Image: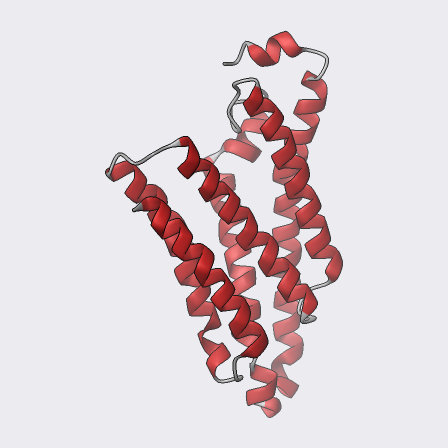
Length: 207
């Protein structure tokens, strides 16, 4: 059941992408609600897996992979339609590839994604519940805000002429905050892995 929920989230993502590109402006007002559904299902699949005893290595990897696909796809699509700068999408994707590669290397040595963080600051920024929640919240707010106002200029041009500048300013703040948190949580992973590269015994000792 949990993997089915994850698969549903995957399919809804491409429904959302289709809406962004192809739906009439009025229909696109539903995009933020579809995004919220995708985010809600992200929490639901883990809850169902724990309650039904369906936790597995495949489920964990599948969930993380879909998380990354959702995030990367949305940044790419929003950049493609001109709603965020292209460099934002490229930076977030590059960070994701680097961090996932490092975590894959650590996993091959039996070290979990969060277990590899040894400094207290690294654990707070990367593994801490607060920072994980803050990043997820800011990122979701940025996506929802952008999607909410995507069709407004077409539907209500007079309102957009008066308030579009404010909307774009808020958009910039949310996007830059999401990028800053993305880097803030990614850099410690790369730094600690680099520092541990010459200490393989210490890395293996955290199994």
